[in-house]
Amino acid sequence: MAVKNIVHYGDPILRKKCDSLKDFSNIDDLLNDMFDSMYEAEGIGLAANQIGLDMNLFIIDVTHTEEAENHHIFINSEIISKYGDEGVYQEGCLSLPGISLDVLRPEKVTLKYQTPDEEWHEDEFDGLLSRAIQHETDHLNGIYIIDRVSEIEKIQYQMELKELEKISKKRHKVQSGKKGFIL
Ligand SMILES: [Zn+2]
Image (cartoon, rainbow, N blue to C red; front, side, top):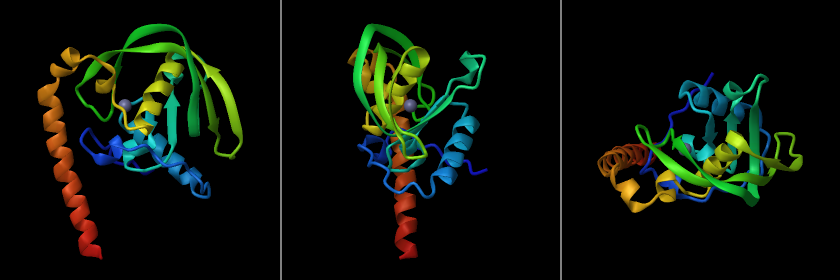
């Protein structure tokens, strides 16, 4: 088991559009780390850049809402279309601890993606799964839930955001510094 640190608001990797995954040779280890990290943090979804990896990969587990196991792996995904009624739902985010916001999103999505066997798929999703897919896809494109709400809603979390940014910048500096010493 390898639980990775979840990176928070203010870390540059969360503002970057993630690269596509070309080399699938380490995919099993990578996914084990992703699932371990997500379960440890008690999230229902996790994008690779939330554990510091620049790759188009996210996982979702909405088993708690269903009777059967319901976990998913989406690689090199792209939302082809969004449709259905727009609805508001309260979303939290592992990279924005302590913040939850009412986010307006369309009900359904069509997603094109690869599975770990490198096969391509195109499927429609709705309900919580559609919402989680849209949230994680936003991460892979450098977008947070705070970018999806009005300035008035965002401003109530100004203090928390500043604090998260300060801590992330400090952590990033230390990590970059470490790399320098190794060289
Ligand atoms: Zn999130």
